[in-house]
Image: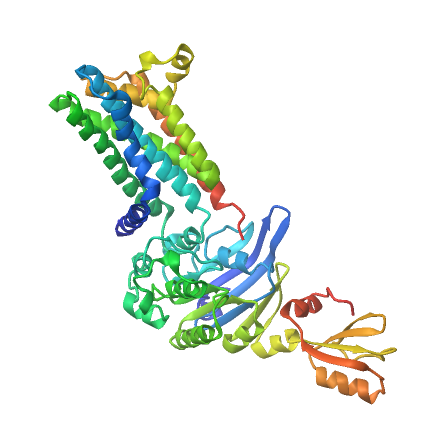
Length: 243
Length: 298
């Protein structure tokens, strides 16, 4: 635990001291919520969109901190040195997760606080916990997706891949426009995407409804798929030939 | 034979290690054993397989065949590496952490680490404690990498070309530190392609070339075999040469490899060879290995 905490601190300090990389991921969701959704009096809609942008914020941290972070670091001399320490892959990953969870929470908080400041959003007192649970559960799924990107993509490819996936999954998952506003071709694709499934369970939570079991199972399916890809990528990287 | 029957347990051990990268056989049946208190130099030219051997010993890679052991245990298990400190061939640190932060992060992995201050002092890094690790010079980076190997008060230090990139003074300083470490009972496995480094430090030398151990023994034994001189001369023809001399010729110009250049030249003079343009140079280790592995023309 002490070791995982130390690695979490290392990752966090690294990002805080090189904010050029982190700032866009932290600030963009809050900024886009303001620019594109703006002020509205429809309580249902603004609350729905607050939930959407909070997810987009978490998605960005997951893809950039895990995807780009792992891709950039895994081939470095430092990462190779760490493998000579009495340090397990799990402890190192736990450090990464701690740091990412911190930044994801910060990015989502920006959106939530901002939404409360500029719009009449309303989440019933007994819906906060289910909502946070849904946000966290989906956060784990997309974090696994980020880890998969990190171990399969080269450092350069990871930036392109993470950016594209971040934007496309947000749009097609109905996190920017509501799913009802998507063009018909996108509607077809949308219902199978992890962001849409995540959206369904989160929107249900803030609106006081019960999410369908199918949506949860779909999300769990993505989690398993991403986990397998991530684990396979990790093994592949471990056996990669470097000199 | 049981471990007890073989005396003290080996600190580090490679048995029949094979490792292949694609089409390249990096290691072909390498055996290596390190006993407590030994400083073994793994000597070899670039591409000999030294780094691969080290990475397998440290549990970073799995061999295709054979076993690696640290203190009798599997090195791929993190707990096995607790009494071990390592410096890899390439060093790099998180750019935005300070030197002291990097040291502290490494220390936290060990039950009884050396105090940060003392470690930095010992490796001449005290004044750099607050400097960002990304801003260090090549030599400073290397010194930090070696210091980190000693952060956990190891019983075994595995150092892959630790003095590469160090100036003469820093190199001598590190040699002193390693001697003191061994004097206190520590064991060291050191890779190098400098024969002088092996001569200065090692109690035993293992020579690796082309993925195989081609010689091992005391420093003197190995020096006699790989400490070759290269003798250039022009002559109409050469008589039979003393045993152990390898000759290459082109258009009456000869290059002779020998461990005993004085003896060779005396012999040539006694036989009345009318040589001209005599030059005697120290052969590089690469050339010496080529002769040892039969790559040269006899």
